[in-house]
Length: 183
Image 1: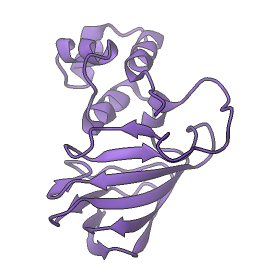
Image 2: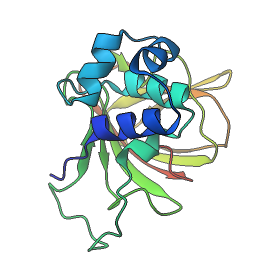
Image 3: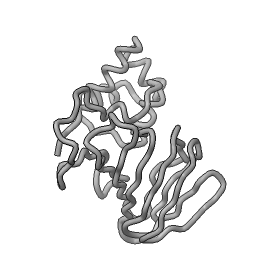
Image 4: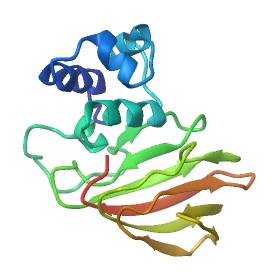
């Protein structure tokens, strides 16, 4: 697995915006101590925490995972995915594309039983297409609620607030593509 230094990226964007640690922590509704631990890679932030930091910094979340160099390979080998989150404890993502430098990202999302992708619906600037590989999920898109099972797919229009909920007893696995990249 290739590790991304998320803490360094957060600090880099914070410094570019000339924000103090305390200012960014307040904007992201975090304690300065927690933000410091994230920047120093003492703790791995949850997806929701990272979304709040991205919102406060006014950068798309994918920028935290973007390499500044061109990838050597176009292929990502099994087991070499960039991982986001804590498997089994929260929604967990694996970036299936080498990076987020292109116009599309391809990810695998695993949702533990009785968990949700977010507390409140989130939207992307672009389209998302998803396919349920395993499990049963409920997808909330704007005011609609749909049940999806293994083999079902969905297109989520741009700027449509949505969230995923695993109502089952086993982890749900959803593969999706987003354009432009949303992480």
